[in-house]
Length: 436
Image (cartoon, rainbow, N blue to C red; front, top):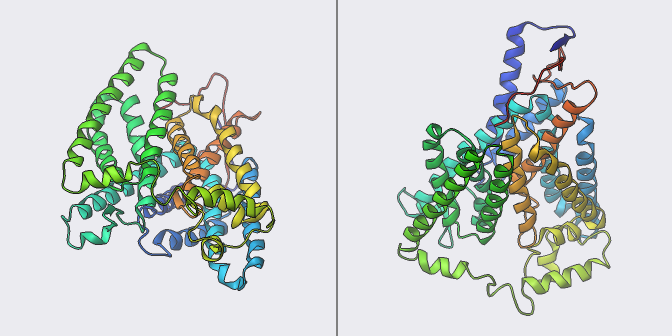
């Protein structure tokens, strides 16, 4: 391994800069678990972090240019759709939020390749810490154990430190899946706390009574377990995975049974478990609005503007992100988003089977990302912070892989600071660290 330095800075300064950058990323991801009011602390810190990183020299990796360009087209499409509003300035706030979230995805994708193993583990650990606290708040609020517990519920469903149970539930899926993956592939002596945290998060997911969150959890677990089984080289390891999954499935059945035995919970579960709700079918229902909406968009290449679908044309919003990509972001934004989603899947699938130290994070993020794309059909999540974080994680991991696989096999291991640059080269016979 050869280290090439340019204008070296004192070692103490280097370590300090790296730690500050890592802690800023960790705090930013952690604050994503608390979105009671908007702008949330997440957005405020994101602006500060972006400004500081731009001054220090944020570098846009060439491998994430498709992400950057397609998100720019997405935002330009939203800006053009404002021209269709009766009062165009009224949509500027919506445009600003969309733009900031798109930039957040670019930011994470840019900083992850600088130190992929450290940064990806840091992100998922900070995410999990925030999710465990948010889940506990949601559970305690649902059962009225803490004062003002009703503040953390909505329509009899746990919403935790979020505004909506339908956002809170899907937010919790990634840390839950990551904990399960760690249990399946890690050492038995380390799984006690991981199992406890996983059960806390799963309980909160159940109490959100979000059908989207339930479906996401099941789909993400299926994908994660399948990939973990394929990547496990030993027969004993595969048997262990199957045994853990069987035991976990039985434990979930017991947990659900206990939850359903509580007063009021069973009735709400029966109502929410119905595949088609009263507001889905029939004339003017969700499914009918989708058909009419896509037909209507054929005559509106610039879209109809943010929030106009429910305010001007129909009684409810789209509740379909694929449709909303065209109504709110026009043909330009809609095509750009569909292309970005497909492109992200294509570049990530090969990473699931690469023996890299950060593979566990990529596998779980990809599984949840597929879940997010699936619930695009039933919910508007174009302003979900954790969705854009997933885009950043997957494209950042892709950029890190491409940097490693290029001719020189260079992969930066420390974040850049204004006074120096470090490049690592793999020597003959050297191998990457063992994957998780």
